[in-house]
Length: 344
Image (cartoon, rainbow, N blue to C red; front, side, top):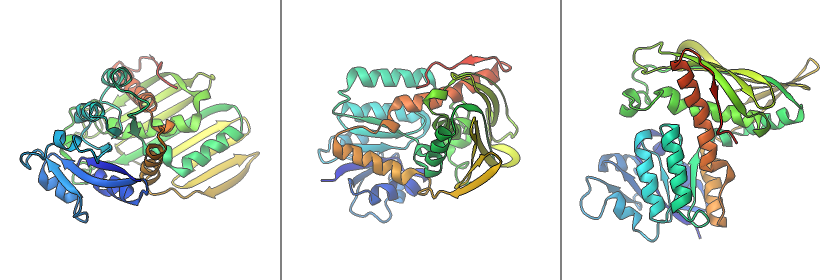
């Protein structure tokens, strides 16, 4: 029987990604939607008249606490502003509901570690699971590229560069909590953990980052507190590489390249390019949308099987966050080297 699930949050990502992913999963059955306002909840549920709506302005019996009391709802997907999520995660887990919360795991490492420690100390994790969503871990192109990296042997170096220009008026910028961030890093935190997750996936645990140094800056006044970071990193295997991300530049596109003893592997969109002895081989690897459909589907499958999905454990998201936060701290301290101790 499908697991009854509620979506918590009525924002863009919940509407465009989570809702269709839940509806497409044979192991999940959407029972309810909660958002801060009824208007927001209705915007998410335009084509789901059979789903119950909850909000803080819907009157008695329609609060988040009321939703969590329902015996037919066994799990929730939480997609709220970064600073709001931890209290909703705790409440759901305390009510015995499985949770899939959007990245980042928390706003900063201190809060994230406290939340993870609370989870393991206060929740029966064999019966109630908490996963953190990171759709880059479900991109077929990254999985295939990682397989090629492993096949080509020892990692010698890597280059990651992601460039974009976030302008006023675009849909994500006009989200109030992104437009006027009270969380560290602004867009770099919200988007940057995707990129650190992608890097970690490509390198594998044998090449986890142990030390980094970074410089950061704010190129655009409308993207506080910083919108650009460039770092040099060293892995436990001894390889070094660079990582750069900017949401305020006129550079465009992305570069993901790993150099191995047997050749190089690069990702550009859905194209994975392998170069061995000067011979270039390109392979088109189709991703399933943004990676959210398989991410939600795998979560549903794990719930149905009574297990947890290892790619979604909060410690994975903690490792993603550590790299990003250490880059921000290094940038604030003129490139001071930072040790990375939370990598898996």
